Image (cartoon, rainbow, N blue to C red; front, side):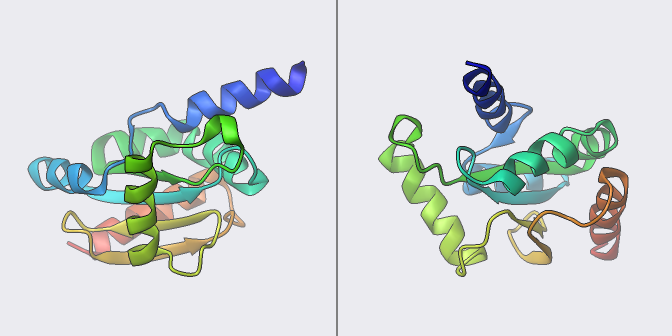
Length: 146
């Protein structure tokens, strides 16, 4: 029972907090608002490091405060359990993002993009640093692009 509740909270978190799931829409918003895009590839119902990343890094107040003003967040989720399967349309969008930005199929895998979708920096796996340090790295990637 406890596992089911924790899992449900994790799934809700993956799809909340202003995460987008359509790269074309995210690019339009990023261009309009003069922001960068942070694309995260995750397996919300099977990838422990992915769940940790969303909880410990992306859920951190320092990261969230920076993201609110400087980023459009995009999540390309690849759940495995039948009950969590995505619509065919969403799966197609996620596959297209993976083909372009994560062809090796790494999880978690995070990419900082400019507003046009050009890759600026990548993080492979769960960061071996604090949420604050990861936030600084992302911010530095944004400033390096200006």
